[in-house]
Amino acid sequence: MALDLGGRSVPMTVRRSHRARRIHLRIDTVDAAIELILPRWAGLAQGLDFARVNRQWLMQRLADLPERTPFADGATLPVHGEMLTIRHDRARRGPAERIGELLAVGGDHAHLPRRVRDWLKAEARRGFAESAFALAQRIGRKPGLIRLTDPRTRWGSCSPDGSIALSWRLVLAPPEVARYVIAHEVAHLAELNHGRRFWQIVAELVGDHAEARAWLRRNGARLLRYG
Ligand SMILES: [Zn+2]
Image 1 (cartoon, rainbow, N blue to C red):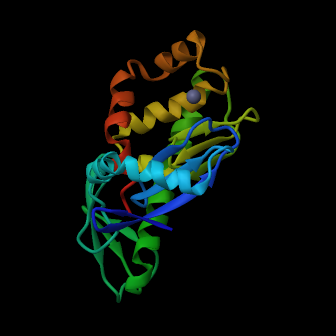
Image 2: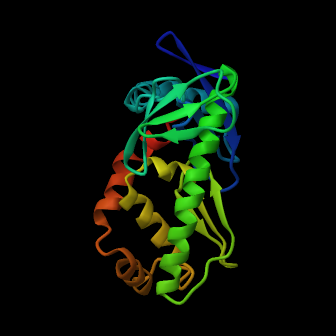
């Protein structure tokens, strides 16, 4: 469904939550869409009223979203902290390839975004797995499976079985920010909590990480607006 905001129709999804105590509104950063979360006691009509009452807040939040950077010819991407420009050449064969400051992508126009994403994921996998193993070795641990994911609300996670999931979008963050997230998940191999000992391990691995965390708070939404 959609919500009319000052003459503009904005996509909205409605979700029931058993845990929610009150009606919530969220902005989906990736799709620039609204999410309406209803607790058990609320009806749809009540939810829609709530959304209308909060129209100004929604419009402001949507206006505050960072500019979208589609994966298209000429777009520039900060990969591991270096600016690369996408160069689409239909006639080109084979997978995307970095050539100096260019990311050369071949094939049909329709497949361009997927090809760029695949290349970024492969870049992320290469760099992040190496980094995770090296960091884990320093605390005498070994990560299990390392997966590249695309979550919207977190950058990484670590399961009790030692497998680590990392957002491939971190390849578009400054390298020290990606390194902090990897160290954070690696530290969970030793401490599955956010206690004092856990933060000590993170600090042992990457030193001061306040800036990396602040960067993610300030710029995380921008990472979600690529592609
Ligand atoms: Zn954590």
